[in-house]
Image (cartoon, chains in turn red, orange):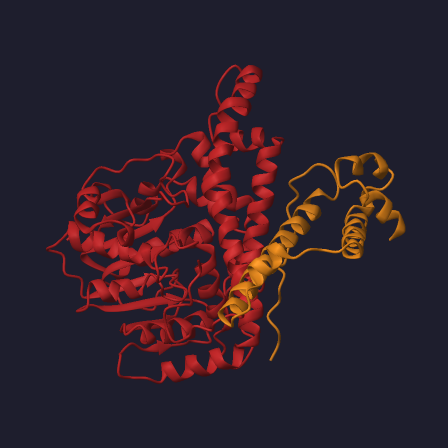
Length: 398
Length: 112
């Protein structure tokens, strides 16, 4: 069941629109939690033995598995349904946003003018939209994330928020904020003596995973940055509607306009895999620069290919080939430790974690699991009812 | 104010070697969506009518179709099948296939 968005920007759909949204959510659940299991069985029982017969060995990486799977009919059906479902997510919300565009923009403006909650919206028209966003309809999103369709427009924010509500088929929590909840609470529970005062979330989109930082660390000043003004307008209004004081600032993560040593935490989630490698490297250097000594650079992402088996690498890299996310695999092929040390961080301060979903897990169990060494398996980063989020962090030397 | 586009830019991937199967998959999934939309609406129609004192559910279950209605519906169904399957005409014989279906469906299809 798909519920209305839990804040004042919710635009209830017509009955048939809601039914379409629910159908698409079911379709995604069917593909990702059902067909994906059968596809793995098919690989083990048919595709892999055939590969071994021809090559005299197992596939060594995701690319070899992908090549072997391309001619398998089950993979073709899986991919076709998943690709269509992704398009249908957007098609199930865009008519609703188109119809309510004036109301969404008026509500965004009214909420934005409410100063009682705190948090500033700062737009900067001089920020260039990188080609990696403007030239690609990322996630098959028509018009990508930077487009604006009216004055002071928030529509791409509304599309993003409504889409992720369908896309997640309820697996990211009522506020689609489980990633932010999981990682902010990981920091709070595992490092209880660390009291961050300033927290940055890079590539925050509508701030659904930024707001949890303000809720987990209410004393801290929390800022989300993104290059897309419509996402930021919407995100700021959304945060205010939820009573969270969060700054939203238009800024490119690879060119941070902050002073050296000004943040205690630099966080991002599901962000790096959308960036060209050169921008990832710039962002890491900028994060190192703006972090205070003893500060934490924390990244929630997809796990690296060098930690995953050949099949899991192939499975997770699907989006790179079929979901308009061309930088996805090049990022996952990196050595994440080396990305950090190249930016100035100390390898000894690096850690990885694989976490259960905070909003789906009893508190004591979450803390107990968060203390464990990371386990890389079929549920690490694979979007499903069993997903466990991957992250890595590195402390800047004090 | 411009309209938000409905379709993404760029090349569409092709998953099937045979021409047209990718498009067919999209059609099937869209069609299935709309079938579900109609099914859910019918469900709601029965519930809303029930709440207003009209028991459509048992009314539908117990409704006795007369001979003319049976023939008319058979014809409509056969016509629907003929329309949906028209692209496959010539690849098999419809008269052989309808043996598995209602006895008079083929005749009514001809009549329709």
